[in-house]
Length: 211
Image (cartoon, rainbow, N blue to C red; front, side):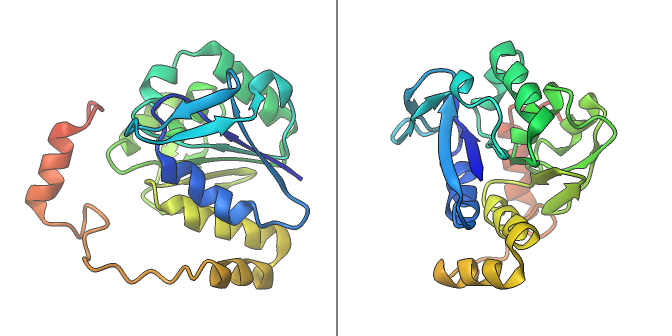
């Protein structure tokens, strides 16, 4: 099983690492990082780079597609090289997935029209522009399309999909091996729970026009 995780300039590291550490534990899985060109691709902080070992053209038909999000997603919305690859890969993929604002790239490729989907809470309404039906759920399955909400939810998406593919026991084994047992120090992980002034501050900084 080949898992292709897409990289682009200024993606968010955890969007890619969460699925890498979970989906990558599937039996006989081969994970490859792909980008338009091979070589280092910088994350949104600029302080970390992942290596794309293959170009998009070299990986035309992966079994699982993973599209991360991040600030750099905005610049990719009209990148026909990437969007065409997503359409081509989706034609034969078993699963097409995204984390955070990666779902907006799936939407721009025309893959989410009429489907339930999620994204980072600041970008959720943007899904409507692509004919998708936004939902605030953390992980959303609609056929073979699996979208995850913001950043850390990529871990949940990966574990859930591992369970679908390899069974609950294997997914539980992956979870235990990673000691993924969230006990956050603050209950501020969603806009419904976080202090209102923090929510407002993040909204004011958002690159999205919120409607």
